[in-house]
Length: 455
Image 1: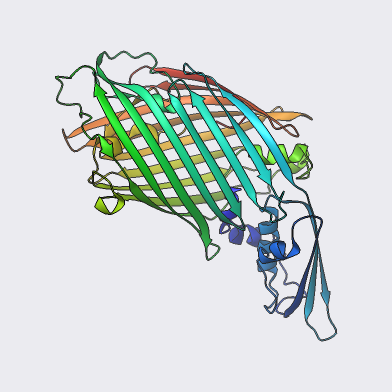
Image 2: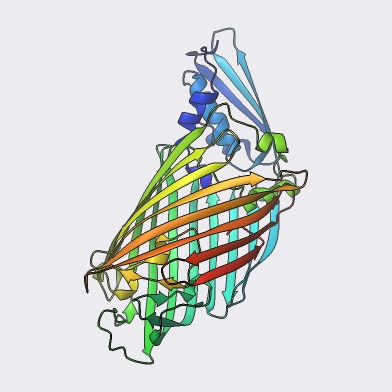
């Protein structure tokens, strides 16, 4: 559903798919738009149609409108009929077949902490074309939960997290990363000290499209942190956790996507297919070859602010800028190149930049912490053994991040590489996966298996 708020990609896509010659209806006024649906209220579907009554017909805008309707994740089939009236105006008749979905789903994420969780999905049950998601993840380190509701491109989400874990500091300046639901793993660097962390957080966020181009998000996070030091360190090159208290902050984000970036199908669409909410795609439909490669990019910026106005015990100021460039080849295999710049400016220890927040392809047991970070990653996705039941995907990756700590003027480099192997069923809502990650800097590694959703 999150692709509903990426409408800007449609402008470029429509230029490729639109007819080369102008439509015979080009420039004529649209007098009436009629919707006929099987479940969703026609007024809701009509409000999402990009073209409005009284506008002049444009083939390019018509292509955009059709793609937006497809991206609502509500309709199985949509038929369009354009009729020219005696007065020269146009009538657009749209017949859409839709359904609803209510589905509970259980998933297990392998690892030393035995993480498991569940998801409850609901779409269009109340006939508004809505999406509702409730999720819960539990491990021996704590739990997290989230509730999301979206309709007509707008979404609201509420989340809770309660963690209680040991964080360890190592001789190379890194810290353990238990919050990724993974064990600290093996490492060639000795442990210097450890401390107990109790962290509770509540978040609320809103997202909505602006001018059919940008996705805007605003939110608020209320977090409290409590440390219990087990053993003091004598290594002054390591930051010390001394910021117990409230870390409340406001969050603002903006993102832009000009084309579909190469990704796997969402678990939501897979579940919808088995219940007939979506039309199942054949191998030929999903992997039809392009006549030429497709390019795309996206860019996002997020700013976090905390001070006395947000009832925070510490000043928080952080900015995250990320961009990605994608190349999808004619055979549908793809490359994605990602860049990221994070700067914590004036933030306390627990709000500083973590290398694991920038290394997003793999799962890492160690994390560097600092005020500033620059990173990049390259991912290749290769699809093979496309059969009647599903297909395999092999995704090798390499990524690197440089964390700069203003406190001791140290630059710490973290590099990782690995690969994921997954099998996606065409019509059954299960994805089987296995991912291997190797931290090239400290020699630790992670092997994670997944049954239930993407990783």
